[in-house]
Image 1 (cartoon, rainbow, N blue to C red):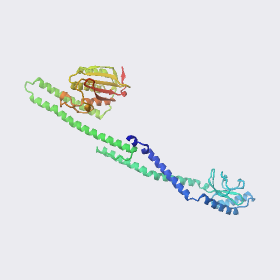
Image 2: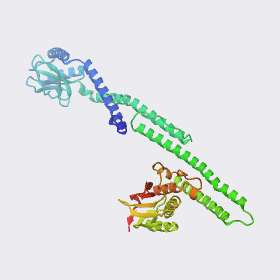
Image 3: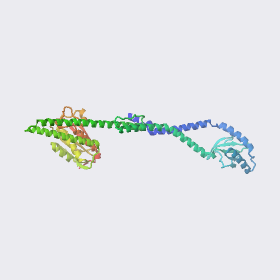
Image 4: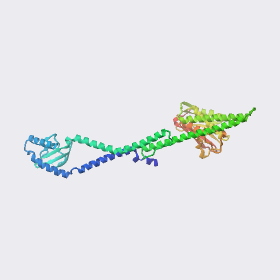
Length: 433
């Protein structure tokens, strides 16, 4: 609900811009209303036009005079008023005109006033004393200029109304850009203030989340290197002690212990290098068609595991998938208390595959089932060097699974023990054979 509120319509950026335009139009309407309010009222216009009609009636020739004489008089008046004029007889028929003939208004009324006419807009209608009517269209000669002026005023008002919003948005974007530059310069603690609840605010939140993740990853890498240095010193120290114990007649158990420590050190270095490779490039090349069941059976034979299931072909990196299976079996061998190891391969619903490796060891406490996939994490009750593990086996299992579109998890096994379940997603194009 909180996320829904953050993305509510009233906080959408496009609505803010739309409301700004609507506000500008409202301001325009208010300004137009004010102009209309200060303009002459209809009653005042009627009184004014009525008086003008009395004066013009005395200037114009009487109705029985020829049309040419009426036209000359109208042109004289049109020049003085700078308007188009049309004279109608008592029946509403045009008698003479100065300029284009103005159509009679649709609304007929006995007195003088302002009327609407198709193609002319507002007309001044003057009822002469002798029954004739004079139509005047003053705006007709200046309509283009008036239209341009109205458009210019409207554009100016829109620009003024939109400027504060646009400036506010650009300022927020500039601050966000400054934060990105600060992060890019090496300051991993760089963050930006989240202002508002629109798309720019969400972008700022995304930047902060990304910066926080980058900071965590860099710190985790530093911690991993520091821990790796410590882990490397332990077998090396044991090797030095063992070398000091070597005499002329070197005991076989001492040589085996040295060889074991060297193997442990070699495995640790290899897994650290592979972890660094997956961290640097999570998307591996998956160009091999891998028979997952056959691969698991080969690795299971090394530890005497019972492997079964359905043959499933995955598209992936065969070397990494082999390392994944090997780490699963080694983990079960080290922490399974010598119990039988079982593995099962099956197609996943909707495509892909599921690999399960199970043992009957003491199991993993609920609070540690997620932590066992962390690099260099050791389960409670195990000491350094116990079982030959260095704490990277299951961490690599999960990373290899994720690089192949899957995931890994630890689940409790019915009857005791642990099952490590690796699920490969449908994008692996798994197909049962």
